[in-house]
Length: 318
Figure 1 (tube, rainbow, N blue to C red):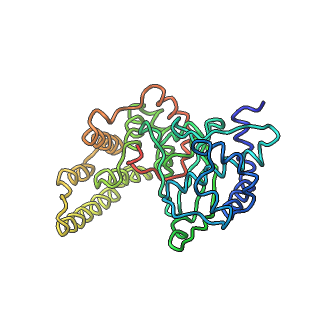
Figure 2 (cartoon, one colour):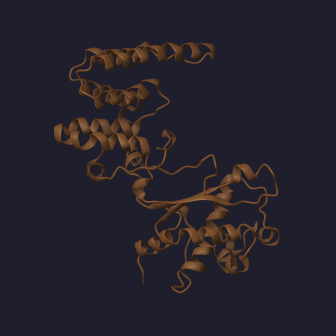
Figure 3 (cartoon, rainbow, N blue to C red):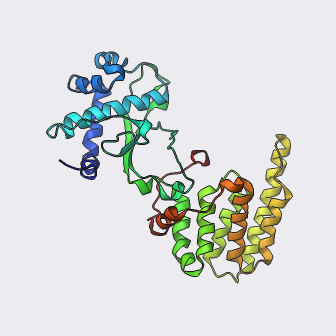
């Protein structure tokens, strides 16, 4: 009997042919073979309400995005069972309530439409850098386009198999990877503060976004004060521009204190510590006790993680 790792590898290496079969089923082809599986995993042991129309016309009823994800997931499971695991007679369950969509494979499934509107449950802010404990199939659909012209003829337009560590923020992981090892060797406390900031940052916050950009000042010798001054001038200009726009829209202004944090970098020495401390202060003032340092287990993972995230992770997902 193959273990979950081996079964997932089968899915990964055969993904293209599996997706082709799912797309055929979305056209109403080959559904008779899938029918027993769909009935078994259907609610109450009954075929899904959309099955008859799909089989007859190759179309789906007017469904919302979440239901579309369930349709794709059920068809995928039926295809995997009947095409890939038929000889092993492996029976798969769909049970997202347990934290992973396909627990028998320890594999998640995401079916966003072309606007990538989806979510992934995050139980710790540090998963924004560490990713997930399980691998995930991302199956992109054309739902947003096709729903405008019913009846709905859905197709999967792109697909990818992401390792657990890849289900993390691409840009934040790149910055963490760039500085992590050097900071750990120099001062582990600095490294923890940086990774804490990257895990909690909300890039819609003006100061947080500016502090994130400030780390680019460390790419060249710190003696180059012209680069620091140019950075501060750009921040001052953007600060004024943003507040003018906010005034017109009667939105709360960015506080002067935020700009002063950026201005203070002109006199900071060492600059790297000043940026790191300012970033950590932002986390503390924004999240208070909730903005915690990584625990022992998270820190050990952060030290050895490949930090190879491939997606964008919204703060709302933390």
